[in-house]
Length: 370
Image 1 (cartoon, rainbow, N blue to C red):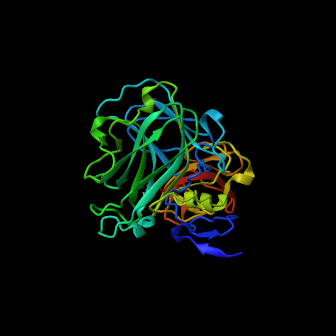
Image 2 (cartoon, one colour):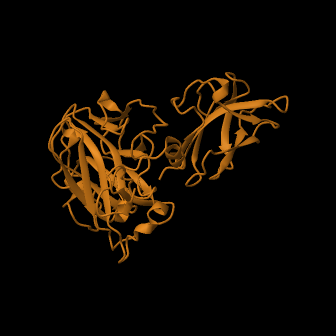
Image 3 (tube, one colour):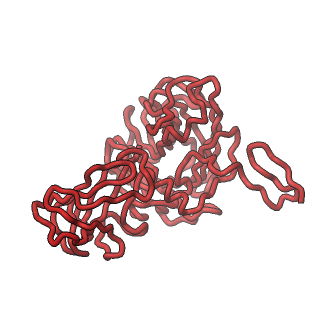
C-alpha cells in the first residue's frame, strides 16, 4: 500500500482506508471531549456571580449575575455526536434580559507555555482554527472570542446554528495577532470564550483583532435570555492550522494527567468532593510529632503549574480536619511547605499524636488553575 504525505493533515493512504490526523499534541485545548469532571463527577453546578469558577476540568464559567444558568457534564442526557460520550451542558434557569455590562460565558484559559510556538504578538503570528460541535434549543448567530491574558486584545467571532437540538459542526479560522502581549509563561496565554449572553460593553464586531476587552461578538444570541434554553458543546479544539482537522482523541490517562497539572484530588476519580470514603481511598502519613509540627509529606501525582491552593479533608468529609483512624477525626490539620511537586501536612489540632508512628488519614484537593 502506498502512502502520500498530506501537508499538516498527516498521512493519507491512497486507497482511503486510513486518514490519520495531524501530529499528536496539536490541540491546545485540554479535555476537549469533556470526559474529565473531577470536581463534580457529573453533578449540576448552579452558577454564582463575579468569579471565574471551574466546572468540568479546565472549563470555567463567568457570570455577572448569579443563578442564571447551570453547567453539567451531559446535561439533559442527549446522545452525544459520533465519537464522543461526554459534552459540557449549559441550561438557562431564567429569562434574563442582559444589560450593557453583563458577561455570561463558558470557556478555557490556555497556559502561556503551551502557546509559545504561535508567535502571537510578533510579525510571525500563526493562524489558528477553533472547531467544536454544538447542540442548542436555540437557533441563530452565536458568539465568542479569543483574548489575551491581560484582556486587552480580543478577536470576537460568530457562528451559526441553523437547526435546533441537532449537533452542528463549527469551524472558525482566525489569523494570529501580530500586536499586543501574549504570555508564554505559566500565566494565561489565551482565553477561549463561548458567549451565553454578553452586553454591549464587552461585545465587539466579529472578524478582527482590537485592543479591547471583548468576551463575545455584537449581535450574538443570548442563551440566558430564554428560560430553559440549552447549549451543549464537545470536541473543542484549537490548533495552529488554516483549516480544522479531525478532533484529537487522547487516551483517558493522558487526558487526566494533563488536567491534573491544574487540579488534583486524592479521592477516587468517581467520588464527589468531599465525601466519606473507605480507608483504601485515603492518603497516609506516618506521624511523629505534636501540635504545629509536620507529620509527613505528600507528593502530587502530576507536578502543578504553580504552588496550588490545598484544602484538607478528613476521611468523613470534614474540611480542615485530619484523622488518626479511618473515620475518627483527630482535629485540625493544614497543608504547609506547599510546592509544585507536593506538600507537607501539619497537625494544628492542639493535641499530641501518640504513639509516634500512628498513621494519619486525610484527603485533599490541590488547585493551580489559571
